[in-house]
Amino acid sequence: MADVRLERRTPTASDADPERLAADLALAIGRLARRLRQQAEEGVTASLLSALWTIERLGPVTLGDLAAAERVQPPTVTRIVSRLEELNLVSRHVDAADRRVARIALTPQGRRLLDRTRSRRTAYLAKALRSVEPDDRVVLARAVELMGDMIEERR
Image 1 (spheres, one colour):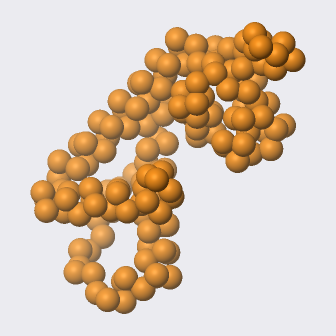
Image 2 (cartoon, rainbow, N blue to C red):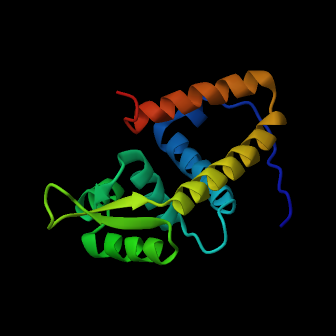
């Protein structure tokens, strides 16, 4: 794939128009997300990785809670968890307090996969950021804060 460089220009007031900025931001985020997905291991889809990260963040979780966190329907999360189990990345355990409930947890192999994926993505971004001017890295750091606020990660 050819390395395409876009012409750099100084942003103007029209670039800050919410609709135009939204379109430009969506395009840039989409392209970056695609590049980061390419850093994943063979056979592990974005949906599988997302579910693994959610399980890591929430700890042992029910299928219903995982479906809600991932914002997918229960049949979808059931298929995802079944595939993760086939890959030995998660395991199901009956809840001691309510034997009708199963909780999904990462296996050591699942944790190692997340660690490897995180390392590969971080290495990819760090390499790209080394070519960015220090002042521009400060701008990116502020943009990360703003995007976090936009998606309500920081409360």
